[in-house]
Amino acid sequence: MTAATQTKALWATLAMLAAVKAGFLAVLGPVYLPDSKNYVMFADAILDGDGWARSLDLHAELFPLTAFRVIGYPALIALFKMLFGGAWDWLLVALQMILSLGATALIWRLTLRLTGRIWPAAVAAAAQGLGLAFVLDQCVLTDSLHAALLTLLAAHMALGLLDGRQPGMVEALGLGLVLFAAFLLREAGAVMHLALWPLILAWTLKTGSGLRRAGIVLVVFLLPLALGIQAYKSWNQMRSGERFITTVAQTAMYHPVLDLARRGLPVFAEDPLLADAPGLLPLHPIPGVTFTAINRHLKAAHGMGALAVARHAETLFYDHWQRHPLDRAAIYLGRMDPRYAYLAFMPLSGPERLSLWAGGSTPFPGPGEIRRNLLEHGRVDQALLLAARALARLVSTVLTAAFLIGVPIVVLRSLRQDGWRPSALPARPLALGALWLFALAWPAVYALVYLEDRYLAAATPFVTVIGLALITPWVERAATWLRTRIAARAE
Image 1 (cartoon, rainbow, N blue to C red):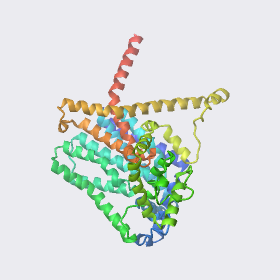
Image 2 (cartoon, rainbow, N blue to C red):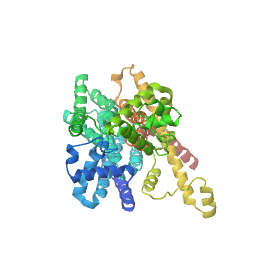
Image 3 (tube, one colour):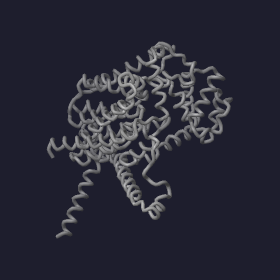
Image 4 (cartoon, rainbow, N blue to C red):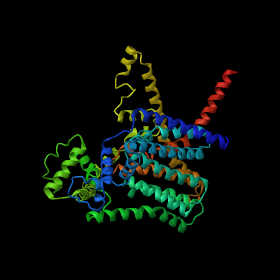
């Protein structure tokens, strides 16, 4: 397998994925979801003048537009509106697709580096390109760009570790700037940067750097984010008098409160500020309605602004872990939906979901319809689609199980062979372990508050990559055995 063959295969895969993405974009156009509206309104405020940048009244609006969201994505939308006019959303989606394909290319390279085979690299690239990324790339949301940047960071670090190449200081600074860009898209980066620490430390230490240099590389990597966060807080302090990043907690951090209320716990009655709030129980089926009611009550009855409401939610979060630890733990574990095992390989479900999000239909039959459609209407195509989706889910489940179970086995086995000395771990198991921690950090942290599968878009590609890295030898041995049996029968 020559380098030229590998390059041709990579470009062919990227070209096919780009063609599918472009086809869906041409048919469906940019996809807008409820959160899209806030980003566009923020962008319009940026274009209307600079008053918003100099003054912010946290009591004026229930959800202050320029405080509720971090500025990165609205600023990008504003830029594209200035440059491209009415076509801004098409060009923005095109940019998201291009960066996502860049992440796909690094996923290909990482899988090829771990397996030495083109076919698993192609599978990993297709899984990433047609999975959650496929859905999110076409949406006017932060998720696509955020996931692409973090995928690029994690894959770049893992490749550096596997190649035995030391990170330079300028390189670490550049990676830190990418991390800061990701933070400007989603403020969760103020915490989730911790998921990258095992990767960059393993990369630095394994490639010959001592503890002192590894510490310096980590500091340089984190410097843009640390300075950027403080600058962002200072900007908010300048315009509002309060030091903070966003007020998104005034909705997001009330999810845990509602979770406890659904279990019948008296969380509203226990709270002096919410005990007299009307209309909170029974809970509305749409959480946003309850969030709005909570914010309105706290503002009207207690004179609380958006930031005070957000900070109250954070106080309740820690208080409820002390008051109701078993219930909170049960809720936390319950967020780990077994269906997340289907995310590692979803080449049919990704395009289907995008179609549904765009207001279209699904080619799959509804519950209980397949028998009637097959017998009365001859819909063999639907039966084949269901069979293909079931096979994809089986493959995805196998990959997820290999990821979850296989990495600890590989790392522990390597540690035992090397006398239980972590410093003696070879680069491959070290990279697998660091990527394992990176991928698991996303559900582990988000499940504390609220978890949707789209929040796992940065982590899922590495579940696929590691799963393929671990099962590829078994698949090839099985294929060799099968070919041998077929050849023997032919003789």
